[in-house]
Length: 161
Image (cartoon, rainbow, N blue to C red; front, side, top):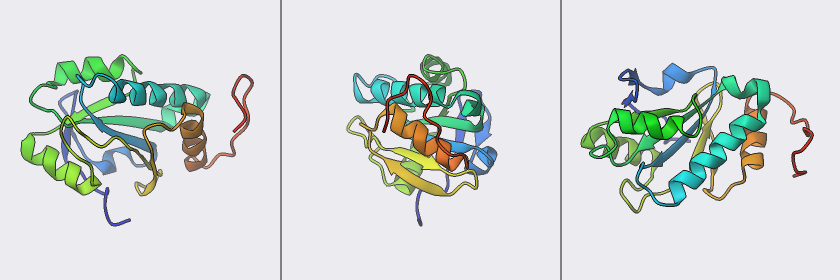
């Protein structure tokens, strides 16, 4: 794909971040804002559950939450929000120009009426899948597992696909 390839943002930890920083991991990118009343928390909860389904492979996945409201989502707010779902998640932000440029690169709407797909990248940094916001955690975990180069074992307690 010729889009969704690049961003230059800042992590909620204050470090500059770009796609190359996450090479070797499967990366899930989601755009939203911390004051979103419904879609964002549901998507983030689904991402957290999907990562938990991975068990020992969870450390090989990085979930990135890109705020579309950097004016309100200051680093501390962003960090608290993403870590409430999973301690490994990372929030990303930029100034207005970088936020707009990143949203344009990913072809999403950046605002309160934002787009809500989950972008999954392979370990080589290539965009491999765009999942709808209502995808199940099990389905996301399945896709993440395949992108990690593993066959998907049906674990006890997980529903059959």
